[in-house]
Length: 189
Length: 248
Image (cartoon, rainbow over all chains, first blue to last red; front, side, top):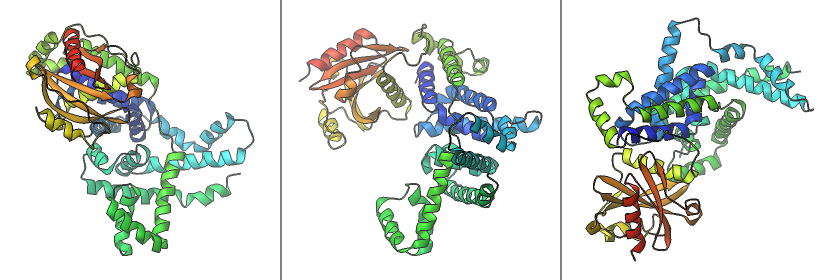
């Protein structure tokens, strides 16, 4: 494959799975700017590496590169503590976020909307607080609907490890949202 | 199946990773076991909540454009990256670039029917893969039967080795969500894909298209609509289309 062909092919692939890449970036890095930068880095890297693509699932190959760039960004960010994830700050003010969401909409079903906004804040926070290795596996499986094989390729792990991470991640997430749920309802209104 | 082995299969069943036979066996256990049913419902409600309650962040338009720009720049100057200069490969890349046509059009999205994007992408994917051919054969009596049972209608297969277009084989590929047969020919150094299209898709492609040195040429293959995708120039492409079109 010539370099121009490779570039065009990677461009096509990246555009097709850009939402998946960006969503993964957002959940790994927590804010828009870092996620966008990481996905862009990944694209540049993918263009250079296209000649080494050896067949197999192209989406998983692309997401593997995206993830590596996200992890690289996490490492450099860890060294530079001045950068704070914007989403994380917002999540600490979950109630405000829920309120803001409510203000946009002035029709009646306030109760149910408040409830669903709170559910959303709770779930988002629980997922965000999940250790990274479980979070990424869950995002790829439940949101992006990748198969075990694809997840294994994207995370560069054996399938068995993917299965145990999924199952552990689900259990942890279940636990994280359970005790809080009745509490939230009680203080809801 | 006892409960403990069912518990191990439960996530696999839930994630659609169990083969059919084991799936049925698991379902038989499920019918009799309330605990396993409850566990399955719990997994499902967690999934529903994840999908409904957490945002799937869509890529911002700015990022989409930024990537398209980077791709266009890379196509215009493939050796602009300073790191590349240190690679021994750089020289051969530059050569390939000059040989491949120095003036490539900037990469744009959305200026052609989506089916054309699919076809170009399938062709590139095939070129990128380790082997672009599923059934390797220069014998049309091998290639045609291979398609039987894999697609609704096996295409007309002819070899044009004498005219310079040798049949090398076939594969099944996707165009949109349809499985289509693809015939593969070799012309000099060019690998030529002939996609056989469902009638609905064929309507969107009425005339030849070019993109980054690759050409797409619609034609009739027997009573089916088809399209040639390759990096041959327009004259060669048209000549091949004529050959195929005349075949009975």
